[in-house]
Image 1 (cartoon, protein in one colour):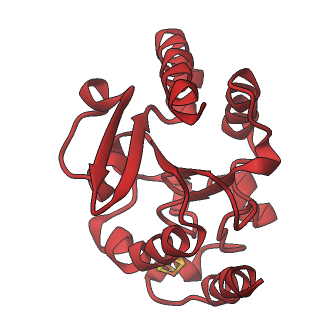
Image 2 (cartoon, rainbow, N blue to C red; image 1 turned 45 degrees about the vertical axis):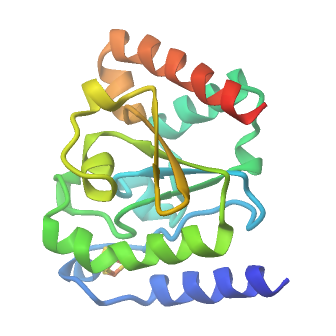
Length: 183
Ligand code: SF4
């Protein structure tokens, strides 16, 4: 109960955050959603148009594909926590700047600490290089990485999978690797 309250309070802070200039152009900040008891946490890059309009993470086509992938490995969307590095949408979905990532990173770190998942799944190159270091997603995908007692798993962003069929099948294979770890 204490953790649930901590998470809710943090999300309220995020919804009102003005730490970086993105608060001026967003409609709603998108803290993320899922149970505080989640064993798996998925981290995307930033909210897109639909997420900005609804305040919910991964509700567009990328979200549909992510939900499909979760089902394939026996997880319901409701059982995992889904969020992103940036909680406010960059205009025209441009790539986040380093300053924006630095301003927002603390929120994700607090979410990870409160939820304490078994695995944090990093979706895409921007997320991987922001949290782990300069590692190309084409080399890092399908691998686990441990740092500071925390286990990460790296794969592509669902939006990239929707653009390139080859990435789609690679992402499916990656998620099977994740599934074996969770058994
Ligand atoms: S992106 Fe993060 S730091 Fe910037 S305004 Fe939104 S919540 Fe605050």
